Image (cartoon, rainbow over all chains, first blue to last red; front, top):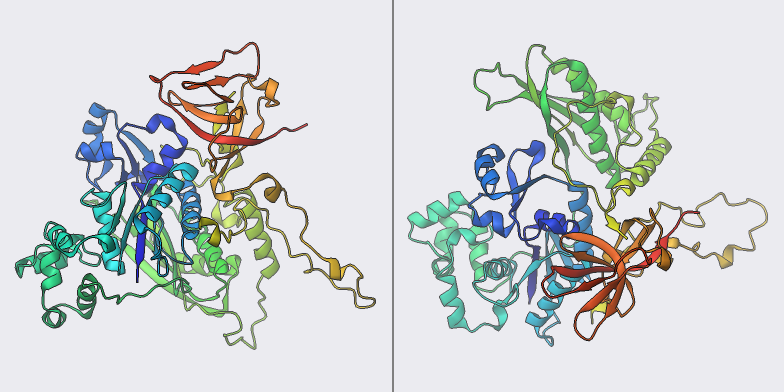
Length: 422
Length: 142
C-alpha cells in the first residue's frame, strides 16, 4: 500500500501571492477573524520569529520594523483556490480523501511501476504552474507515515524538491531520520500526549516506534496503539473518500465590536442561521432542533459577564431558512439580557435527518417554502452570498466581523477580478 | 498518465442550469424531439479548456488595441500551458501584472505592445519577470 499526503505550503499566504506579485520575497502574514491572530505566515515572517497563533497586536512593533504585510482572511479566495487545488490533485489518483482546506491523501496503490518521487514532483510542478501554489508531498505505506514524510519534505529533512518518499529509503536511513524527529510531530500526538510520552522517556519518533504497543494501549489509548502500528508500516486508518453528512451544523462568529442591543443581536443571529441553513440544504438534510447562544468577552476582566444558550425544538424537521430564523430569534429573545457587552453569538442545527426519514405532524399546517429556498440558493450562488436575504438579517450589519486588510476576492466576484495593464 | 483520471467536475463559474428534460411533459402526444435531447451549447466549455487553471482578469489601458484588447475587456487566462512565440500573455514584471505579446528572442524575450504609442519591453536578466498565463480570449462588450 502506498499513500501520499499532499498539502499547500503556507496556504493562505500562497493564495494571496498567486494574485499579488508585490508580496513575493517579503514577510507576509494572514490574520484570523476580526484580525486577531496570525494564522498563516510566509517563510520570511517565520524567520522573523512571528509565532503561529500569535495575537497580532503583540507583533505590531516587529511588523513595523521589518515591513511585515498583514492581511485579513480572504476565505472566499482560499475556498476557491482550495477547490481548484483538490481537483488538480484528484487527477493524480482515483482515490482522494480531502482532509482539510489545504491537504489531501491520495491512494497510490497500483502506481508502483512509476517512480513515485518523480510522480510527486509532477504534482508540485503542476500546482505551481497552474495555480501558483507551492505544495509538499509525503509518500509512505500508511497515513501516519505519509504525514511524517510530508513533514520531512516541508522541513527539508529528507527528499528533494518538496517530495519525500519513505518507501524508497533504506531502513537504516529511516531509523536515523526518525531518531532526530520530535515525537510531537507524529500525527495524533498533541502537546499533552507529547509531555506524557516524554516523561516516559519517549522523546523522538524512533523511540515511539520501538515502544511496546500493548503497554501504551493500556496506559494511553487504543488510538495511540494504532498510531504505533501505522509507524511500523501497517495501515490502521482507512481511506474516507466520501465525507459523511454532518450530524450538526454550527455557525458562530465574534463581532467586529461589542454589541449591546437586541436588534443588532437579532440581525447577527438571523444572518448566522441563514448561513447554517444554506449548508443544511447543500447536504440535503432537515433539522429537528435549533440552538442559539450569546456571550460576553470572557477575557475582558472588569466587564460584567453573561453567557447563555437555548435549544428550540421544531414542530417538524425543516430546511426552510425563514422557519429556522424564526425559531432562533424566539430563543434569542428569551436568553437576551440588556446591559451586557456581547462579543459573540452562535447558532447550531441538531437532530439532522434526511427527507422522507421523518415523521410528519398531522396537525401542523405550516408548509416549507421549498421553491423559495431553491430560488434563494440559486440567486446567492450566482450573485454572491447574501445578495438575497431575510430582512431579519439587517441592512447595515455594523456588527459584522472586521476584515479591514482583506485583498480582493479575485476569483469569486466579478467586480474584484485582477486588473492587468495593457 | 495524468489524463487518465481527468474526470473533471463542471467548471466552478458555470451558471446553475436545469437538466434538459426536467420540464413539464405534455400528457398527450409525446415530443418527437425527446430522442434527440442533448446539452445546450455552453460558453464555459467553449472558452475554457482547463477550468482549474483558468482565471478571468480585467484589462485596463489601451496599449493592446492592435491585438483587439480594449480598455475594460475581460480576458480569459489559461495558466496550464507554456506560452508559444507570439502568444498574448499576462506577465509579471517588477511586481506588476501586464498584458503583452510574448516574442521569443535568441536571448531572452520581448514583450510587445499593440499600439505605436506604447513602447515594447525588452526583458533583461536583471528584471524580475515571469509569465503568469496565456490569454485565450478577450471578451469585449459591444
